[in-house]
Structure formats: structure tokens, C-alpha cells
Amino acid sequence: MRKFLVELRTAFPDGTDQAEIDRLRAAEAVRAGELAAAGHLVRLWRPVGEMRSIGLWRAADEAELHEKVLGTLPLHPFMTAHVTAVASHPNDPGGPGRAGREA
Image 1 (cartoon, helix red, strand yellow):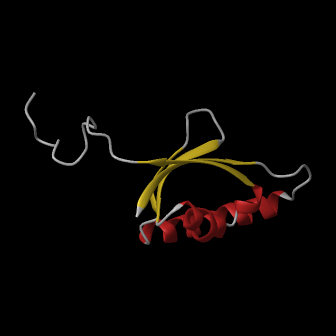
Image 2 (cartoon, rainbow, N blue to C red):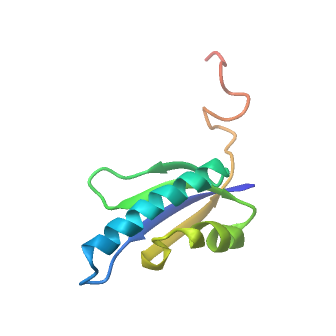
Image 3 (cartoon, one colour):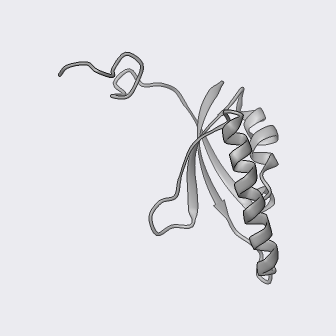
């Protein structure tokens, strides 16, 4: 599977019922757990003081990421996503073969 760095922003239309927002967020947490268990959601961060998420996701390709992964999130209709395909860097200190190397 390929890796993708995904920035997600969620915005609800004015007047959206708070109970509906709470329901969707609870469902989102459940679905995120399912996607993590399936190997699609690897890591998820929230920048301090901001209402957006940055995550490391896996999918066969960008089409699968949008259609079968992100598209299944309950908050998807209210999200904008910025997707960047990423690959290992040879100088990544946490990359394969780098752990335990002496400086």
C-alpha cells in the first residue's frame, strides 16, 4: 500500500444542530478505529490550537484513498482534504536499516 499525508478540515454549515454534530463525531471515532485496524489509518495528529487534523494514511492508490477510505468517514460531507503522496526518504532517521546505527 502507498502512504499519504492527509490534512483534513471539517466545517459544518451555520445552524447545524449540535446533537447531530456530536452524533457524527462519535461515529467518526468508531470509523477511524475500524480504518486503523484495517491498516489504512496509521497516525493522526491535531496541530496545537487548530481545528484540523493531519494524518498518515495507507491505500492502494489515491482513488482508493478518496473513495473507499476517506469517503467512508461520517464527517466526509463536511470535510476538505489536502492529500500528498509520500515515500521513504533515504535520510529518514527512522527509516529501514537506520535504527541502532552509531553516529
